Length: 68
Image 1: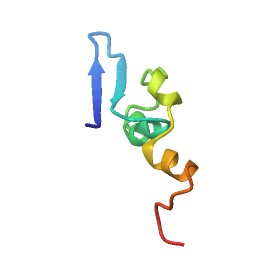
Image 2 (image 1 turned 90 degrees about the vertical axis):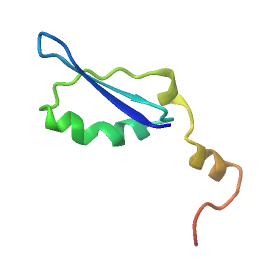
Image 3 (image 1 turned 120 degrees about the horizontal axis):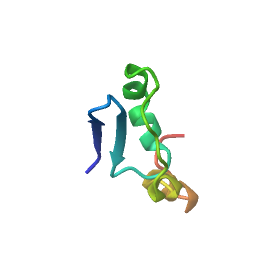
């Protein structure tokens, strides 16, 4: 399940964590939220960011995922 967690600490620092995403899909999912906080949210790349998303993995194996 894909989930976005927003944590605001007592000092007003904002941390946004994306769970259940592979590749850079987390960046796409959180960019509007980060912008809403003025771009001041903490961003940390987790190991999942370096994984190939399922749809891209399918394309690498020569299977079509859409119409031509």
